[in-house]
Structures are given as C-alpha cells and as structure tokens.
Length: 83
Image (cartoon, rainbow, N blue to C red; front, side):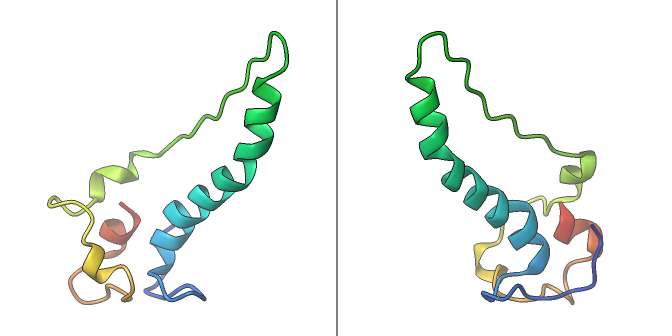
C-alpha cells in the first residue's frame, strides 16, 4: 500500500497489478477446484473478497484503462493509485 510508482514485471502499474490482476489470477486458479467441490452433496463453496476504505481514493471518472501500463506518477498520488 502506498508504494512508490512502479511497473509490474508484465508492464502494469504495480498497485493495480497487485490489487486487481493478482486477485483475478488467484480466483481463476481456484475456480476449477471450487466448481468441482460445489458438485458434492451439501457443498457450501464460497469465495469472499474484501476491500479497504482505500477504494474511496479512486479517480472519480473510474479506471483509466489507457494509463494501466504507466507508472501514473505525475497525475496520480499514492492514494489514487491504491484506490
């Protein structure tokens, strides 16, 4: 949280890569097991995702997909990158 501007190894803004892309990848990898487990009798399979109040720092116009492969250093502060 609130790391200096950086890019991930695959070229995305590091905070976005950590907080969004990595979470999506974990879910994608878990999904086959979750689905298979859900087939068993009386299965109660859940995936719970939580967030912090840091989301409130997001850019008011939403995700700017054109900047996801930049360090977002000039126009974005630490809270905005985290949000």
